[in-house]
Image (cartoon, rainbow, N blue to C red; front, side, top):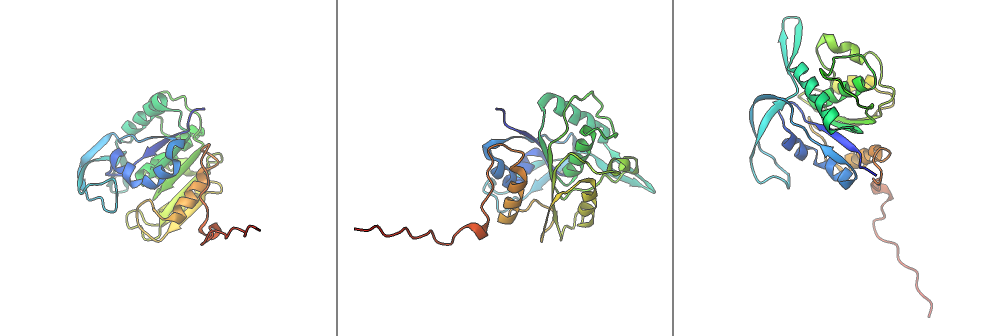
Length: 246
């Protein structure tokens, strides 16, 4: 039996390599039970030096390519998603050549893109991929710090919920990049979404509680994955074995 395949989409100004580190919690949860595909976004917006702290996978500062799925340009009352058409064609080719994908993990701008992809594959009218795509609907979404695309021409994508796409949403109450209101607004797109709000900023949390919540959400979608025991259900001391009679 083949392993589920999950498409992992990084945020604005990041890269596949950086997102592998940012999403290490997710990778540790799924382990060998799923195949994770991390593409680089097609738009280069410069170079980025990121100091990776508190990561066993980092050996000090590392250089990462600074990539995005589109560049938002505001001019008066108009909002343009520059590079969006290029990205949609690029994603269409990934779906055709590396799919089918069971789920998508998306962070920030990658989470926004993940929702658009899921909507299109569920049959929602929307921006074309630019190539013919023959891919089944996405079975689940996990997004963090995600939001709706700002351009007015794409707002109809969010007009009604995605009825067949289970989702989990992580959002920080102190997010200073996209705020907390935008990720909450996105929830209306989904029926019975799993929501994990945490006291933090614009990142994927690494706490044991988040691990348990994420694992519980993923278990039905990834064969072989086992739920993490709750701290309340783990005894502080192992039980004392009964004394054997002489």
